[in-house]
Each structure stands twice: as structure tokens, then as C-alpha cells.
Length: 255
Image (cartoon, rainbow, N blue to C red; front, top):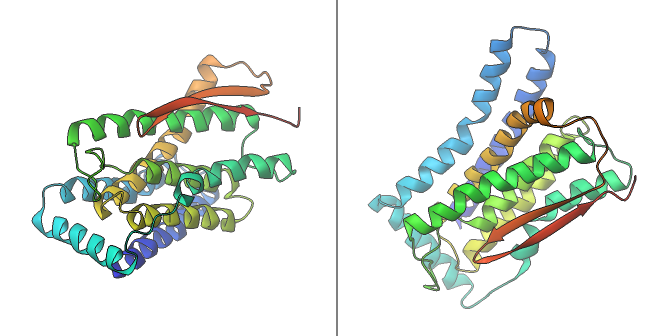
């Protein structure tokens, strides 16, 4: 269980540093553009390191031993225990963003902009996770299939947590804390359910955070070149995860 506590502390450390970086970025808004670029690059260090750790864990004997020992420890304390909360918790931060806006607690972007950013983040993460699962062919701890790396649930959870943090970081840092707590819980539950190794979860967290950060960096250029400033009240977004796909519809009830 020490590994799980360490993972939680790492992301708490990341969250606190990301919040300080955002504050510094706001204070430096009138300073040279290269300073802002450096801050953005610094914010990519931890998610990139998490992804790197995940890849190394696929072939490094020491990290594979850590994967195995953690899985054994969890199963010794929770033999045969399974919960479905991770299936719902992964989406909680994104749902919270739209719920908060519906109740009048406005975030950084309007309905159209935040929805396109969310769709872009989802598209990036799906484009990364699905091929990786196919090419790495990492067997799950429970032996159910060979699509363990990286964790799709954890990717979604951390992408949504970063989405919530970005939208509400100027309102209160506690929104980001809540989002990352839910994401960390999702990752831990994937281990608890014996569906993923530690490396899968860490890599998934990195992919999720990085996907949303890239979406926020890319969207201003997309908006400038392709979208006119017209209101939008609904958006349908395709999704695919764990051999299941569908269409999710986001609708603005406040128009």
C-alpha cells in the first residue's frame, strides 16, 4: 500500500506546483512571451515523466517486480473484491464542470469553448491510448485480456481532472484538488479491481493530464481559424474505450 500512498503524494505535489505555476503565469502576463512558454513547458514535465515511467515499467525487471509485488499485496488484502465505482468516478470531474456552470458557478470558458476543449482532449487521449493498447499487448493482472497498458479509465479520470482544474483554477484551487482526488481514486480502484499494474495507472495519468494540457494549448488557434463567435447549445462526441464505443451528447440547459 506504500506504492499507492506514494502515487497520491506525487499527484498532490504536481497539483500544488501546477497551481503556483498558473499564479506566476497570471502575474507575468505582461512580461516577455518566452517566460510564459517556459512555464508551460515546466507544467509538462510531470505528465511526460509519468508516461516515461510507464514505458520503462514494461521492460525493466525492477519495475516489473514492483508491479507484481503491489498486485500481490492488494489482492492479499482484498481477495476477489471488485467494485464498479471506477466506471463512474472517471467521468465525475467533467460532469462536475457542467453541473457547476449550470448552477451559476462560471468557469474559464463558455459552453462552446469548454465543450470543444473537452472533445479535443478526449480525441487526443483516445488517439494515444487505443493504439498503445494494441501494440504493447500487456496482459492484465487478472489475465482477462492483453490490453492493460495504459489504463484507459485512469487516462480519462486525469484528463477530466485537469479539465476541471483548468476551468476553475481562477475561482478556487480546491476544485482542482477535488478533481485530482477523484482521478487518483479511480487509478487506485483499477489496481484494487486487479485490472491494471502500477505502471499502467501511472502512464494513464500522464497521458490524461498531457492530453488536456495540449487541448488547452491548441484550442485558441483552432478557435481563431475555424470558429465564428456564435453560440452553441449542444455537441455530440464519439467515444471508444475497452472495446466499447458510443456517442455522448452535451447540452447547455442555460441558453
